Picture 1 (cartoon, rainbow, N blue to C red):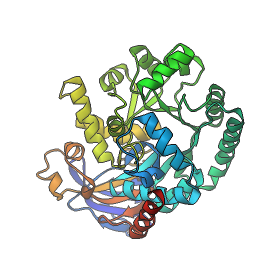
Picture 2 (picture 1 turned 135 degrees about the vertical axis):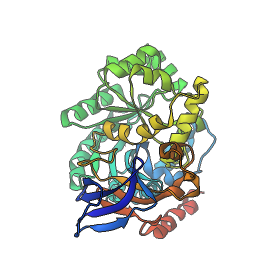
Picture 3 (picture 1 turned 30 degrees about the horizontal axis):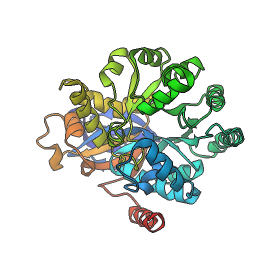
Length: 415
């Protein structure tokens, strides 16, 4: 049994959309599919689901826990000590809250890096989203810890195959300042050998760059190039402090870069060089980062901030137009994850969102993409479908009250 969406607006035209299994089967006028569940799309527009390209999903439990701090102080003195107390069940509840928040704001896929892989995977499996999951790999140049981390990564890769094909596995070394050179090389070789993505924070702060130059004599992107860690399967988050030569290295090695504007601004990490990246041909997508450094997972907000920040930094209102921001949040992210998603087209994965065109934020309605980037919030999201399954309809997600209640209890533990 499929889903037939009748009289929905697609790119300004009213049409029908038939979903068969987990794919868009037919798009056109007056489709007849008696066996399908019929959704009335009148007054709604269909768009691809958002792809959040950099998250630490279970950090929803740390939302507003440690704000207004410098990155390394925030990590070392607040986040890492708290994370050390969390077990798989805690991570599961945090990930369920994250999935709920993402569904409510129109995200159908996310690229995650966090501890306790199975806790996150269980939540994703139950909530119905699509995700690329990696366990954080940190060894702090400790050889014994490095060996344990390598064994765990290899084991988790094998164990990840128990989940549905909505859940992918990637290697997730945290950063060059938390992972040894030997482990970085091991992780990249493991990823290459098994056809996996390699997800890492890179050049996020000036301190990271200064420390890398002091230790290796070159900047972070240059160092990774020297030790053979760049390539088409690398997804690099942040990448703020880079020279033109480093940007050329990213392009030459087809590295995928994820822009996280809200997190970068909150932590005062620096200004993302969007125009230099775009002009050079870097493949760019968009992410929220975790809820402790954002403090939400809303891609609608992320698109707006990305566009506005780029215009301000470059003193040019034509930089990063709404259409480009929307593509970074949809098809560009899907392409980086090697998914047949990110657009509403026959044969593509049925990951989509129905937007309420009568929501006050979308009226009068001159240009839907502009409205989504500059005006919309989660109240505009009516229905969310992922992998051909309805996850939210008319703004309601099954079990949301219980998910919220479970997560709220954590304030008693953390205060």
